[in-house]
View 1 (spheres, rainbow, N blue to C red):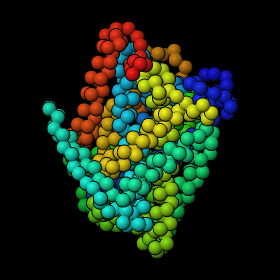
View 2 (view 1 turned 60 degrees about the vertical axis):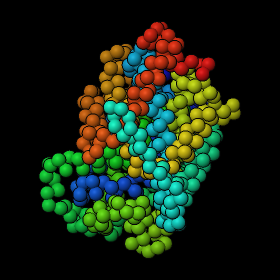
View 3 (view 1 turned 90 degrees about the vertical axis):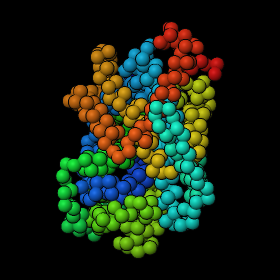
View 4 (view 1 turned 180 degrees about the horizontal axis):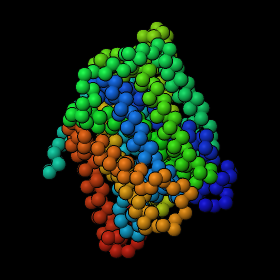
Length: 495
């Protein structure tokens, strides 16, 4: 690792400034993790599991992301440049051969999943804003699309334009505006937003604890833990949503080229943020279950009240003023998550373009503030367009796409890299290697298949995967690259 890696003023690899320390890295991760998701998805998980045993989905989800977090920690410390999985997959599977395909597939799926992830936070923000202005939920336009794919079946997508859609789009554009500046300033903005996030969480937890009823919180229905098909399917659905709520623990890896002392900071930021957020989610869920009967939460999972369950919760305890204040704070929290997501993801196409593996324009950085301005703007605009989709569809599709094309490949890749490059310096080594990688792989497969109608979302990922492989092979053949020739970049710099 370069001697100047831990100096605030030093430039990281790729011409970026290493200006984010441990506190900034943890807050970036936590801002990403604690978005609007947990405030919306609590009723969904309760309904999927059919009672307070929904807590099991949160606990097992936390254990799964800890195992996967150890994968990210080892790879991030060993390869502390910007780009995250792009760098890890390319190096793990050999940058001269299959690593080219794996890295390309990651960038390819990211053009769909990253804007979807950012859009999910913006749509959730707009839904909570509906508590303040009910007219935002008015549907102005709606259309369902169905495309039949040979051998795979039908692909469904719903486009919905409401007044709240414009709020979601404005959220995306505001995040782009605030991120359009130097990383050291962005780090201070992130910490400022984190204060609001923690204040919101602290108030919700305090309200739940002071009004807690243990008999209500643990009112398990008969047969709650009978290991039936319904139990395992419900657990799979619940864990999928919980994983979505935990995601973001790896955000610091995408900023690797801008992290101080990355060999120590990246692993600590990942594990600290997972531990803190898991504790927060569990306490918040138990607290809410101790105030609102699980039957009521389950019934509300399919209604508009699901969109702002915490606002209704605070309104019930303290009155209208509390519901309004809680909504404002949750909107703040949602925006903080969108801010962190866009910050991290914007560095990935940039890193690929720097190495000649993506469109040349994405390698541009701001001449004064040294951040990837083209990548930031393109992802922000794409996320703005994806705000037209339904939130439930966005969440499920992005989780399945990411697991199939990125996470499974990465958990295998960390083992392949150990075998292929045993001499590589590893400032952090996975605990109990290789058990966490095996557990993470098995857990992700379980979440993919143990759900009702799981093939619906798998089709999306399959189409994206097949299209990506075909595009890669055509371009490789045209440029005489692997597997048809020697080295070179995936995409010609002339395109």
